Image (cartoon, rainbow, N blue to C red):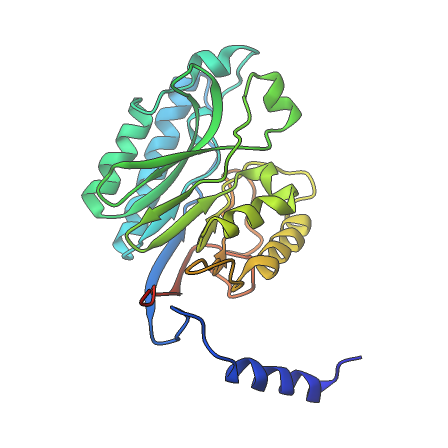
Length: 276
């Protein structure tokens, strides 16, 4: 069994090893992240629920902006929660990228120079229903979309079509990847994002199930598996974030430094790219 002397020797060896390009500790960027968790607001109609959640999210995003947030992340399919929908309504009620819900968040992002991950049910260019995360940059532009690769059986029955790629989005402060809810049940999700160069991985979700017990275990595992590992020149996955959805009480209410756990607001340092 390893003892304290073994650990000390490892730390000394790790401290003395040659640093990879861009890994020098003084070459860092400070990034401020905010997990935005509005309450789950029940309404009679989806239109009313959307308006209520947009208002609640806007208030919290403004608070995040006042704290100089670089990236704020909202809960899963925020434009489709709070009202009971029958089969078929999810597709008919989903928005395209130019819909009013996304446009409102884009305006806020641009006004406050804050990037936002906005998860929505959307219709893609082919008219397919997707569980997506829209990544909006600080200028309010859509940097791109991630489509959930592992929808649940219930989502598939509602018509959600799985995505088939793990994009990473280059924002002004770093490279951001997203995995949504059930994606975290598969170890390959975080690993694919890390291999594709993600430095920050956001995890919006809406679920109950095993709750905080399984989230704590699996997210720590994903962070430990991928955090700080070098997957090729200039690719680091430094921070795996846990962004909780509305409606499920927070076990912790402030940001924690534990691997794989994030609440509220946190600052971190990312390595700057070194010379080629």
